[in-house]
Length: 215
Ligand SMILES: [Zn+2]
Figure 1 (cartoon, helix red, strand yellow):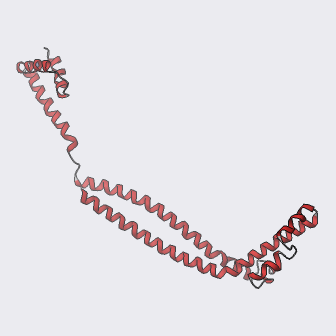
Figure 2 (cartoon, helix red, strand yellow):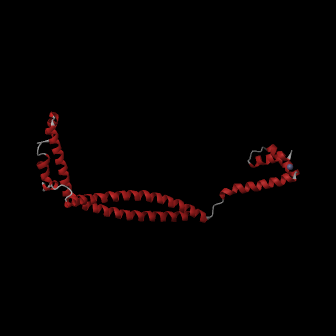
Figure 3 (cartoon, helix red, strand yellow):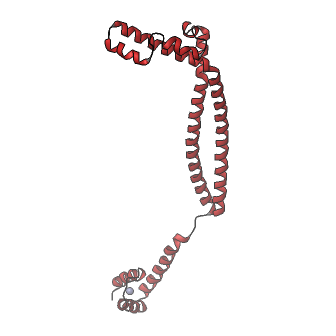
């Protein structure tokens, strides 16, 4: 047997692929050849080293750093999603609270036409007095539309104008309760924001603690 063939057999034996007959031949050569004997011992030592390598754990400090970084990234993602949802809610409620105040401001400064709020004292009076002034009921509109003509268009515009005025009066009437509800909602959302941030912080700390304990 030549040294080259012996070297190939050594690899096969380490992989567990060498049959008994060849194994006996290899041992025979190793006993006779000092160079191959030394080579075989080196190969065995390397093999032991490599098979043990995956069992070696990284230092504790490195593991803590890696896990802390992963936990932070996860927490940051969750905080962004939750924060965005709460911010959206806050903005919506703020707009809800401010819209009636804004309408009231426009009315007070006279930017809105005065007749809009002049004719109606309460909601109950709106429907009979305005919307149905010209039409006894909704069904009466349809024949008028079918018959056509400029008169119908004028009547339709008058009807739509009445609906618009009714809506504005309705808005003015409920402005104060709506603003109150909106401000309550705003306060509640701000409180929830605070609770959310606190919860995220506590959860992150608890997770880091448990991970460090696992290590
Ligand atoms: Zn040899």
